[in-house]
Every structure is written in C-alpha cells, then in structure tokens.
Amino acid sequence: MTDLTGKKIAILLTDGYEDFELARPWEMLRAAGGSPQLIAPKHGPVHGKDGHSQTVDAQAKDVDASEYAALVLPGGVVSADHLRTDRHAVELVLGFVETDRPIAVIGHGAWILIEADGVDGRTMTSYPSLRTDLTNAGATWLDEEVVVDRGLISSRTPADLTAFTAALLREFAAVPQQA
Amino acid sequence: MTDLTGKKIAILLTDGYEDFELARPWEMLRAAGGSPQLIAPKHGPVHGKDGHSQTVDAQAKDVDASEYAALVLPGGVVSADHLRTDRHAVELVLGFVETDRPIAVIGHGAWILIEADGVDGRTMTSYPSLRTDLTNAGATWLDEEVVVDRGLISSRTPADLTAFTAALLREFAAVPQQA
Image (tube, rainbow over all chains, first blue to last red):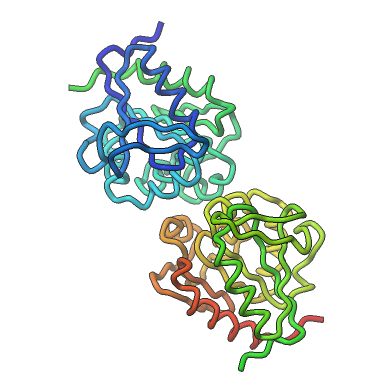
C-alpha cells in the first residue's frame, strides 16, 4: 500500500483544465494519505472544461516548491496554454525542476515545462499535439500510456489516468518527506 | 484600392476558432474582390469559440495549395491545437510553404506552421504563449501588431486585426494570380 502520509503535493492549473486530470489524482493522493493542494494564478474557484469546479488553496505567487514533495500538472488545452504565460506559475514549476522534485504531467500540461526548462534531455509523453514542441525543446517523445524518467511521470490523455495515477503514487512515495 | 479579383484564398481552421479572426479577414477579402474559401478537416458547419458559425466550403483532404493564391490561418487555441494533429491539414499547409505562397497567421494559428516546417529562419509574431515553441522551431519572435517577412504575415490577437488585414491584403495583392 502506497503511503503518502505527511506529504504535501501541489497541483497547478487554471480555468479550462481537463476535469478528471484534476479529480482522479486528487482522489488518489488523498486515499494514499497525502495532502494535495490546489494552486492557480488566481484565487477563488477554478472551472474545468466539462463542469468540474474546485476552490483554489493558494495562489502561485504565494507558494514555493520547497513547501511540497511533488507537483502534478493536469492538462486541458485552455488551462495549459494560459498557465505557461503566467510568470508566477512558471517560477513555481522552475522551483520543482531545479530541486529535482518529482513532477507528474498529463495531456497538454507539459507546455509549462517547456517554459521552465524541464524537458531538455528527458524521455516523456504528452497529448500528441505537443509532440513537436517537446521534441524541439530537447525531449525524447514516446507514444505510451505512461513514461517515467528520473522523477518525471507523463501520460497522454484521461484514458491513461489509471496507469498515470499508479505511477505517480509510486514515484511520490519514494521521495523523502519535505522539511 | 487593393484588388484581389479572381484570387482564391484558403482559410483553414476547425471548431473553437477565434470568431473575428475568421470573420474580419473573410469580409475584407470579399470587399477587395477576392474569393475566400473556408477549409476544415471536416465538412458541415464549424463553430467559433464565441458563437460564430459558418459552413465549410471544402475539406482539407480534397484541396491542394496549387488551387489558391494564399492562405489565412486564424487562431483560437482549441482550433489551432486540433488542426496541427490533422495530417491532411498539415499537408495542405506544407503545400503553401513549399511553393512560397503567402501565408497570413494570427493568434494561436502558427502552431500548424511548426508542423509544416514553415517558421525556421522566419521573423514573426503570434499569441504570446507560442513564443517559446516558435523560437525553438527556429523563428525570430517579435512583439509587434503585425510582422511581414517574405510573404509571411503574422499578428498576435484580435486586437491586431486592423493592421493584420491591411498587411495581408497588400501582400496577397502583390502575388501573381494562380493558374
């Protein structure tokens, strides 16, 4: 049984996210004893593309990667496209990249990793439309339901969520608890 | 007065396009005597993100760049993201790139140019979220309302439409009429 007791996990997104790419990891992290926190550029509620809604726990400008054991980046083309243009969101992701904290990314979520220099030399997957952008940024792209490369867990679409959440729970459990 | 009489212009998009990035160029091309044609991966009506709708004139798989004098690529994040994954749409754009036909692109429309090898060595602009992807694909990116580089006309957002349509009419008028 995967145990994430005491581990804070940041989930970063904004309006237009892929509903189940937030809801499923959130539920699995909680079930494993972890403490997911919903982070967005704005406060208040965020709205998924298909009707899911949830209250933001903290704004990106107010938190730092050092507070968290790991990061989850859900997709949704509108959310992911917006997020990469937000300076505070990019700086938060950069904090995870620079300190080698595990990052789980699905769908279109990987765009912000391009901004945060988090894909060069890594092997990963994504929603297929990002393939060329990720390759041009230095990644090796695979068409698999989940790819794990040194703490970078990636999947393609909501159809991969079972494999994605299993892999991220395993990887997040393996890292030491943050201070 | 710009005269586009007898010139067929392809406008390529799919559902989720930025309404005015189709409607304004369409109107201006018609006013100049040109014959815009709406091309999409599918047939039937396409729907903009804010309620605009229009019937597709031809499917991407059924047309070839040689039939047209020029190409317009509207934006809209959902349309542009989908379009770059459609093989027939990419092949159509590749036809314009390889035959040096003028291309006018706005907003998120430039993603498909990355797939069609149409930005390497070119100077251009786009919606700001594409900046890193375009730069990684070999473009020089400028933050200007319109950039014209050897038949590639580019703008950032609907707020640039006046400058964008003026530039594309001028550039499209300058090319010889297709056979």
